[in-house]
View 1 (cartoon, rainbow, N blue to C red):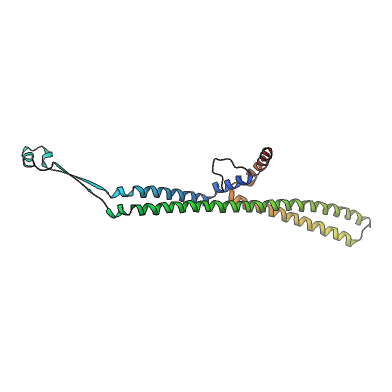
View 2 (view 1 turned 180 degrees about the vertical axis):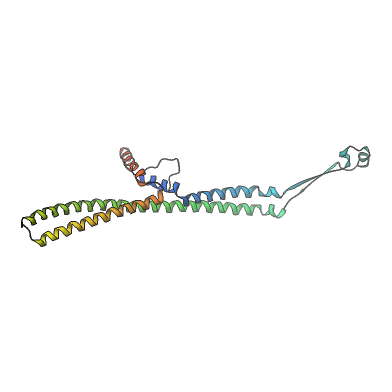
Length: 220
C-alpha cells in the first residue's frame, strides 16, 4: 500500500508513493481525521464522569458550638450525596459503539485514500516512463532525418537529386523535429503531474531511482 513514514522504501515506485502520501495536504487531512476519531472515542469513554456530582452537607456541630453538639447528638455530622445522569450512563455503551464505528470508518477512509494515491502515482509514473521512451525514439528519428536532410542538401547543390527529393527530405526533417519538441513537452507535463502529487521537484528525487535500481540488482 504505502510504506510508513520512517521506513525505507523497497524501490523507486514505493519511494514516490511514500512522498505523495507524506507531502499532500489532502492526505494529511485524512491522517488528522483519523486522529480526531481516536480522540473522540477516548472522550466518549470518559464523558459519563462529567454527569456525576458529589455533594457534602455539614451540620452545626462542625462549627464548634457546644449547644449544637448536644442538640445534634443523634444526627449525622455530615451528609454525602451524589447525582448522576442515568440516561447517559445507560446509553454509554451505545455512544462508545458509535465512536468506535466512526474511528473504524476514518481508518478505512485513510486506507482507501492510500490505495487511490498509490494507483494515481504509479499511473502517472508509468505515463512519464512512456513519454520518456517516446522522446528517445523521436530524438533518434530527428537525428536520422537531419542526416538525410544534410545529405540531400549537398546532393541538391550538385544537382544529384531533384527538388522533389530534396523537399521530401526537408519536410521529413522538420516534421521529426516538431515531433521531438512535442515529445519533450509531453515529458515535462508528465513530470509536472508527478510533482503535483509528490510535493518535491522531480530533479531532486530522480537520482534516487538509479541508486535504488543498482541496490535492488545487487540483491538479486
